[in-house]
Amino acid sequence: MAVLSRDLLLALRRRSEVVNPLLFFVIVVTLFPLAISPSQAVLQTLAPGIIWVAALLSTLLSLERMFRSDFEDGSLEQLLLSPCPPTILVLAKVLAHWLVSGLPLLLIAPLLGVFLALPTEAMPTLLITLALGTPVLSMVGAIGVALTVGLRRGGALLSLLVLPLYLPVLIFAANAVAAAADGLIVTGQLYFLGGLLLLSCSLAPLAAAAALKISIH
Amino acid sequence: MLRAVDLGCERGDRILFSGLNLHLHAGEVLQVHGANGCGKTTLLRALCGLTRPATGEILWQEKDIRDDESTFSDDVIHIGHHDGIKQELSALENLRFAVALSAKSPELSAEQALAHFGLTAQTHLPAYVLSAGQRRRVALARLLLNAARLWVLDEPFTALDQSSIGVMEAMLHQHASNGGCVVITSHHAIPLEPGIHRELHLTT
Image 1 (cartoon, rainbow over the protein chains, first blue to last red):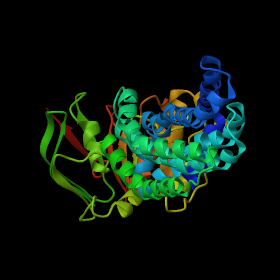
Image 2: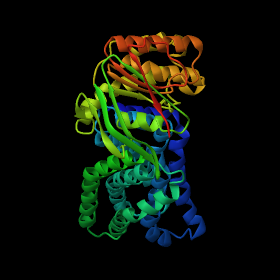
Image 3: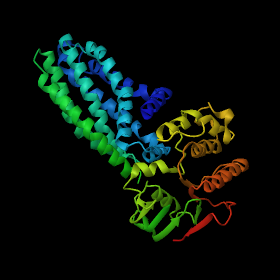
């Protein structure tokens, strides 16, 4: 709990780090109509993919923040030496990361959906997929960051490690939104995303905590 | 209280030390000496459980520190080269967070701990405006807030001014006379009675 409130307070003090990924998300999405075509029919088919790819990249951009600064100033060691179990610490940090970088994406996505002429029927599905999918991105990302935080230049390695694991989320989420836009039933995809969320919530903190111990070794 | 048996550590492929045995009783201060790069920091990190030693075991009250991590981490406080201080938070917020993490409730308030190190005026300043010595003092103030019996201090006197060094030495003395243990590295001679002051020389 203390870790969560500290991370949120830190995010508030370093606003630029929080705003950058969100701004990136908005800019990437708005560039597509300019580069491809402003025609509604074209945008409509591309919208789910564009929004989801942008959300994924923007999460990737903000991932390192989760443990990097704590590692560099020594507070990560203090956290791991504290009596609090490391899995709980990781869970608190991932939750803080999602609240700061995942939730804003969710809030701004409907606006971008309208901008890309996404049919209103698909809007709830877009929000549900983001609500289920972005926490998975933060959870899985935590494992990657925990593994690479001890490396001098872990950034490129982090993307290589984490992106393949992001693919199921991307495929099912974008597919669900596209199917919803065509008026199809999407419960199957949503259940799958929910399953991924449960799986990552239960396993990722354990894996990330173990990885952190190796990284500070 | 603290015992290391046949301890060996490596860094990369290089063996830093091996076959190290030490036994530290309650009320003793162990000062580790050695040239730069001989493994003092690694030894200290191993003793508090941050680094896994290559060989040997470390016992705290005759129990392996890895078997009972949560009890041991309640009893140990480590202050390393990095202060573990968040630049964006004030001195007080940093200390309050340290208190929130530990399971025991402290005898002193965070404000009193800062006052002990002469940081009353800096209580609400963000840590990035503090000087290196002042940040060090904030980190050391954590020692007062935590009832840990084992202090593992890596060069705690770095960047401190004369009066803070005096405060710190008095704290070491106080801690030892309360039955605590200290493992410390410092190139500075610590004025303590020979009875409680033990020294370890690491050679490569």
